[in-house]
Length: 386
Ligand SMILES: NC(=O)c1ccc[n+]([C@@H]2O[C@H](COP(=O)([O-])OP(=O)(O)OC[C@H]3O[C@@H](n4cnc5c(N)ncnc54)[C@H](O)[C@@H]3O)[C@@H](O)[C@H]2O)c1
Image 1 (cartoon, protein in one colour):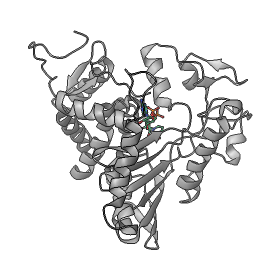
Image 2 (cartoon, helix red, strand yellow):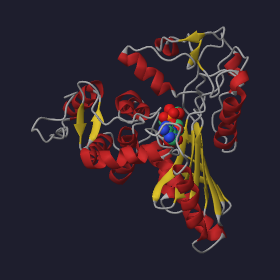
Image 3 (cartoon, helix red, strand yellow):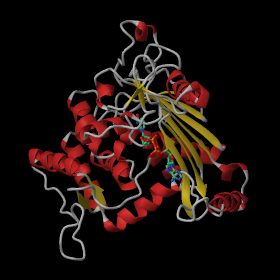
Image 4 (cartoon, protein in one colour):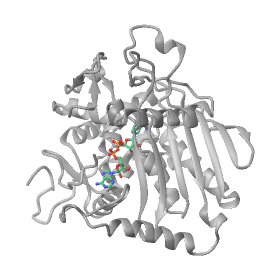
């Protein structure tokens, strides 16, 4: 779950948000990504660290995006190509363009169209990894619209259908966001498996066990060693866990994403005959990802202030729900991340020691300066636990 703490992890540092975005922009432009596109992508990537969704933040720069750019699996300058345009629905070929940028473009296009038609869909094949789905949808909620974004994982297969022996699907994330009056927007942003791979890998890097319920072995028994995922000995479980506790709902949501985000645009599919060749172990690559962006513009359907007032009342009522524990007030998805982000925009973004070391090494390699840590009031850099 989202971290609420703001202290830099032990041995880590706190870096000003804008400086992190500027650094990340420079890294992308150094790899040939055009300036404006690089900045959009940098904002999407730093969003993970800014909001506490660190499994999809800067830790992925050296692990995922730069290797994919270097290998040509992401094309730094490719322009998505329009295949079909019906007005309210657009099909694009993403042409391996940088997903952190292309998802923002897809949602902006859908929002511009929805402002006229009330609803619009932009769907893309041959896309690449877009980071945190909620970063992209929240931007549209701030424009007063309701946004949905989903992505499959191309042909990457790491989760098995409940009761099945072969891995067939990815973590298939989606997000839906809506305005909440003057409050932070509602932003549900989640993998449809119990956790994304990034959280398992973060535990493996930290040498920590994972809770029972994230991974299972070939026979369905719980696995608490996170290294099992990349050793091919652990399968991610669906949200809900077991069939008796709702696994078919998580699995069904994963398939919803596969249908809307990949089957509709004609992207790579997880479940395919080749998934059954071999021993059923995790297989395939997250190339030819599909994504779908859908925007509803309430203002085009019911002009006037009613929608905004009712959204304000809806989310305000939830916040006023009496809590079980007075120390833990009731919230709604998206609010904890936005409150964290507001604080970090002012006071800096904590990075783990490992992430900081990776980024400073990258800076040295590319001949870039790395931003200085925020200096705390006692005059010491706000590094580590003080
Ligand atoms: N691009 C990809 O291929 C890919 C794949 C998987 C996941 N992801 C991303 O990984 C990120 C993390 O996913 P996750 O499943 O670990 O999310 P999570 O479990 O951290 O959060 C899930 C949802 O729960 C809500 N939530 C958490 N604590 C809350 C609280 N106290 N009160 C109210 N709501 C609360 C959050 O706002 C969020 O909407 C997401 O940004 C997701 O888009 C991306």
